[in-house]
Length: 257
Image (cartoon, rainbow, N blue to C red):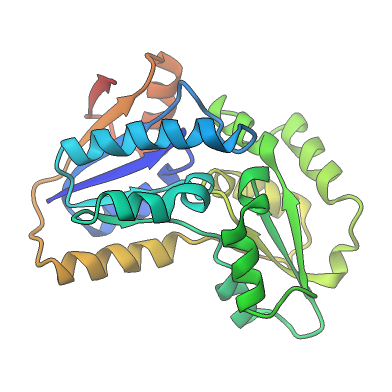
């Protein structure tokens, strides 16, 4: 069984790490580190990057491809499924429904994401479908992606940025923060340090794991010996080191695309 993960950088590891603990397979983690971050770039250009990367995972003959990037999912998931009809492609989206099901009726919900995700119809349609327009506050945290790609997950600069972004809100009015970018769970400790304890953090990794398990069963796929290949779009010893540190995988192949 071959499972491919795609992200612009390191963020997809927050999903990848959860999945590899539950499912044994040949894994391919494709990081478009040459063009990261996606969230602040032009949609047309990002679509070209995404198409090239997904084509690579299709050529490897992955049974399941996980787009472990909210920005990429928000702009490309429908087109990719139309183009590769015989491939199981799983996307990611902010786990807003989880927060809505849990939230307190008198409170509001933060949905954090990249600017690209926030501006796309996919997220806004989800908010409308759940009928929560009045209680959702969208907040763009693009710089966290940049910090993550540099391997910076805490410290004064990160804390000042988060404090600045949330400083204009009355945090007592909110019950949940949806982490709508796969990079954002890497900052869980910093969020917990800054935000009041009554604000619950929600990410979508459990839902993605559940979806992968469902597809494995539907396609009657058999688990295989674990292996991992990191595919990068540009050579980077720093990225390779960060991948090793976050994934906790010491033995993996590397390919430059």
